[in-house]
Image (cartoon, rainbow, N blue to C red; front, side, top):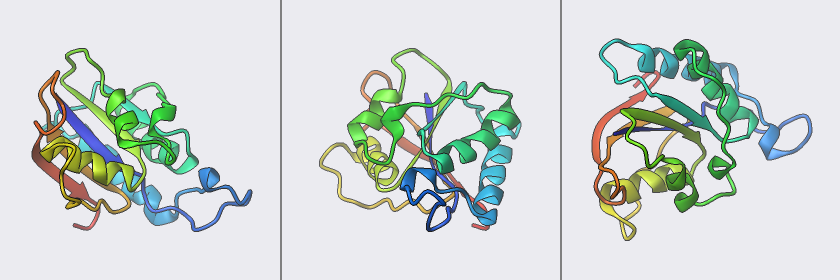
Length: 158
């Protein structure tokens, strides 16, 4: 299975409500989301069967571009929220045999999840995902942790 770990696009520093969960993408963040959606829609890319996002505004906006490009329904999962843990994020990965899924979430959870998937729970912190970055991993089911292989990275402008 391929798991696309995606950090939401660049977001505003503050929201009108003052709540972190309500922060919108900046113009650059919207461009990053569009670029990720185009990357995932390419014929040479394994298209995700499902795309899950955190309930936060900036992740829903990032995933929205992907949902639209791939003609997928909106799939929000609270386990991807910024206040959740790596184990919560990993629990979103379904037990069923799907060819590919995408998870849109927040740092530091996404960076740590990549480390854990690649090298296991005692992995050193080596990954530092930037806003609007996608990392593609090939993972073995049922043993996710420490079994992944890095197969691609993408970020607008890189």
